[in-house]
Length: 385
Image (tube, rainbow, N blue to C red; front, top):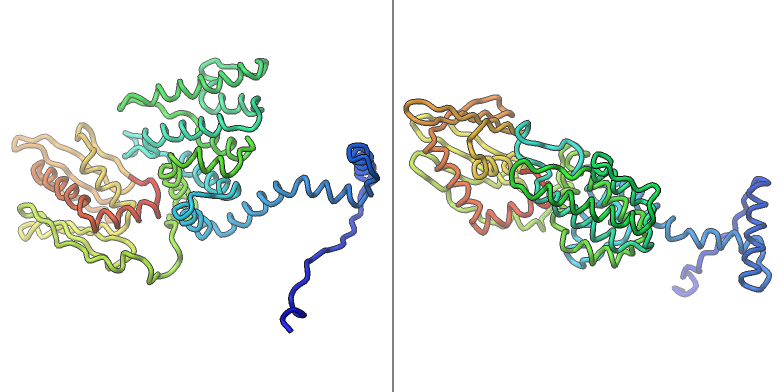
């Protein structure tokens, strides 16, 4: 009974109406195929072969469109697939690059206007390396996008021209521009953004005909940075939501983590709460004398808070997406006023308290339970602080 009901292969017969110009073109193609194959080729077979020649591109474009219609689920699937197999289809790389470009080029944070720098200097360096790796893996020795790459990497401003040059000269111009942008990223301060390198990477992945297995190989060393920017792109483009399945998940390991006891330094107490699981809440209590405490309940705020405590030199005000911190020198010593943008509340710290809070933050981040939880949040939210 089952064999009777078993589905047979599906072969559809379709008819299409062509304009006279399109019919003439198909007939010309029919004659070319007949000569090449040294046999008669029907008009229907010629039309079929036209579709067959484009099937790979059609599948890639269709898959990309389908995945972009369910972005959160698609990106989550891409992450999990990579973590388990280290392989992606070309359409999945396309989707990843789409969100990476958003994460790398939209709502850029540049100190001192906005702290911390996002993307960071290190992330830009990785993007340049990733683009160079894909570009050097291209199918055609002469890339038709060489001029585009040079312009988007700041070549026009440097007087670089590629329109009339030979293929090898264009190739060398691209490599020279990449090397130039890497040099501008070397200073830890006053470094320069390398133009639209994410756009170059997207075009290289999409249009240089690099096979998916080769993309897997050349981009594997850069995965964490590429994913972090793509997750940030999702966060920016979809109402600040993380790349995470909707609703509670019984399989989420964070539900089984026993959070450590509060950390204390004089009157300061830093404690953790998983009430908002899968979010990690961090509470800072300033002691019974001042009776002030505040809760950081979302990862983007927590990431900036940790960066501010450990990476801010206090030479000028910290102006962040979530916090503003201003140092003031007085006779009794330096004080830091911390403003919580979300609550529009200011809290004053002595320099000693600020340093102690930074040490508590560092100590908490080294705890295995907190490390594991924060790492998962970084993967869900992408580059934040």
